[in-house]
Each structure stands twice: as structure tokens, then as C-alpha cells.
Image (cartoon, rainbow, N blue to C red; front, side):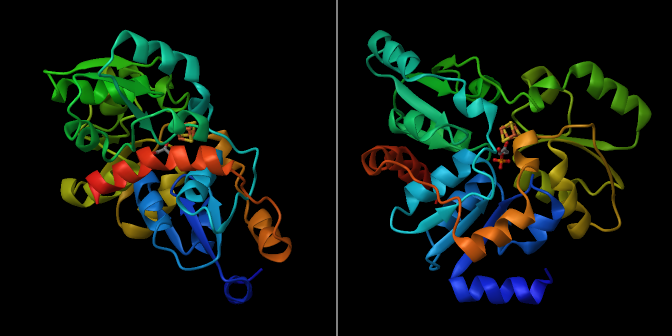
Length: 298
Ligand code: 13P
Ligand code: SF4
């Protein structure tokens, strides 16, 4: 389908397409907005259209629905999932609250609606430190991503972090040895990495930040060769933004993000399939940590 026909179909249906930087380039090209998790969550609260297609994994569709209970939200492939979203349980949260009465549960947005509903604050990789900085409690249970928790913990020497053991299986496979080999192979390059990587990996890089942060930092670091330590879908935006730069990627591919296909988006526009449903009372509870994040981070 050419771009004009797609635009016509979107207009007829009063639909917009949001996409994460990790989905395939052709899906990003078809989207009205492409962003990191925080940008997409924030945008989702400002959209006029009645139909929102969230080109990403399940928790992203749920997040948009929680923030827009009166709109129809769709996922191109409802089985496209983030394994990390399931790496913490309600029972773990309950047990931790019993142990620490002042506990603040800080939940990375890569989590299920059920887990958000039990949490105090949400955060994304771009604002985790800002969210924790706004919390008075001394004891912080950081879920589900233990790496992100460990990466921001040193910024808060007066707080006690309990970091859950979950991780992104894609970013967690990166090792310090991989970074050292890349440095040897490309001595003039800068290395930019996502904070879902282990702290010992981030210790060796030139920039650490969210996908959007990485895209912006390429300009600031201003180097010909850039080694990008995150999911390879971000290459589309990087090459569009910086056609004269060289980008080197290790082979980091998120299966869930790659399940998002343009054909399914077109089918949604034609048939209304794959609508996201979140139980309204669960959605109401899950909305609170998200709106707290939006209030703290603007
Ligand atoms: P950001 O969008 O915050 O960079 O996070 C990346 C991610 O893993 C989304 O699933
Ligand atoms: Fe989840 Fe990792 Fe895929 Fe992001 S890259 S959606 S954290 S599995």
C-alpha cells in the first residue's frame, strides 16, 4: 500500500499510529509519531483521534489504553510481548511492602497492567532518576528491571534500593568483553548504550540513555563512527537523522518488536481487529503511577 492510500485510510478511520524506535523501518515510516517509551506515553494523553494503533509490544498498547480508557487502542500483533514485563509478581510486591512500611514501588513502564496497578510510581529509561528523586520514601523497590535500578542507584546514596532480578534479555546479553572488543575494532568511535544494559557495561561507554537520548547524543558527541548498544530498530531513525554518520550495531534484536508488521496495521484500519482491553477497575489503579510520572516529568 502506498503512503497516500494509507493516509486516506487513517483519515477515514480517524486513526493515528504511534511507533517505538525498535519496530521495523517500514512501520516507523508509516507512523504519525515515533518515539521512546516516555514520549509515546506522554503523547498518548494528547491525541484527539478516536483510534490509536500502538506499533509496539503488549505493555505499550496497555499503557496507551490505561491513559485513554475512552478510546479504541489496537496492537498490530497482540502476541508481541516484552519478556521483562512478566519478571516480577504481585506476591513479591506484597511481601516487600510488609517488610518495609514506607516502601515506594517504582515500576519501569515495561510491566503488565496488573503490576502497574500495585505500584506507586512508573518511570521509563529516560526519567527513572528524576522520578526517584521526587520520592520521599527511603526504601525503593525498583521493578522489574534490576539493571536500570542498579544503574540509577549510585545517584541516591541516602536511599535503600531493592532491585528486582528481572532484566531485558536483549540488553542483558551485552558484556564488558563485547564492549572492549568493539573499542579495539573501532578505536575512533564513540559508544552509546541503553540503561537496560548491566552497570559494568555502562561503565565502559561514552553515553548512556534512552533510545531518544541516544539519538540526541549522537549530535552532541559529534563523531564519525558511533557504536550503538541497543536494539537494532533504532538504526532507521539514526540513519534518517544523520545520513553522513556511520553506525555500528552488535546483533541485538527484540523478537516482540519485530513481530509488529505493516500488514497488520493495514488490517486494523480495515477491520478494527486486535483491540486492546484492560479491565476498567484495573486500568484505573494502573493509571495512578503513570499520571504521577507524567506530573513529575512534565
Ligand atoms: P526507551 O523507549 O525508554 O528507550 O526503552 C526501550 C525499551 O526497551 C522499550 O521496550
Ligand atoms: Fe522488552 Fe527488551 Fe524488547 Fe524492550 S528490547 S521490549 S525491554 S525485551
